[in-house]
Length: 286
Image (cartoon, rainbow, N blue to C red; front, side):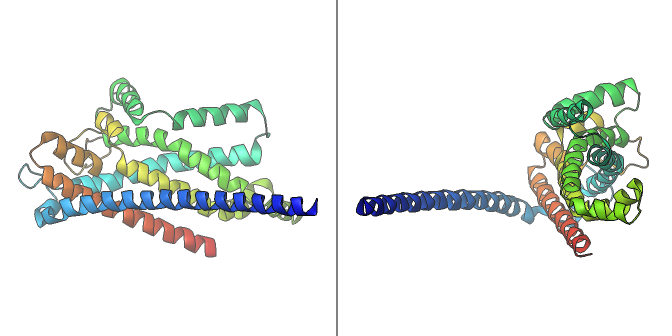
């Protein structure tokens, strides 16, 4: 019996080692494929776009000759700030309510979460049509930065809300118990203990939201318009870098400048992610 048991154990170990090797090969293959795809896309954009980056692309005024991307870059920064100012407080506030104040397992909490998941799965073109019908047409705001920012804020609200909720849940329960034991109230505990501890996770969600804002095109075409100008106020139309790149490509007259815009957009996204990651690390150390 012992010999049979030993032989069975050897066969089992051999099968387990074989499974481990197969899983390792699949994991490495998936990683190499993912990295290779990323390198190919980035390399293709850089090779196509870098030769056509020239000073005229960074003029403050757009013309049909220079097809400057500077107005679009400034509009992108403005659009990002406006959308985050609207969506971040709402998303974080909703997450605080769901985690700290709402009764766990209640129907209201389930309804809010189901609604959030539904909103996160809606295509961006549907958001654009909604913004066109409601903000642009019904409210009479026309194609404007405000219409685009409000549409984008609705789009990124589920992402900020869910990431903030998960970050708040990850805070150890003894933090709350310790604060209550020292006599701190609920509001003071949330804003002085819980939020600072959850801030790295909350900022991670905001970083992802920034990436979606910067790369969004469909929703902004229907709400913010495609006017290549630096908006003097939120009620004027403008275009972001992604819309600018789409416009150049669809016209077919400035394909090379479109590739150059893609390079600048890629650099902007990398810089934003790097700066945000640095902020998260500093907050985490504190």
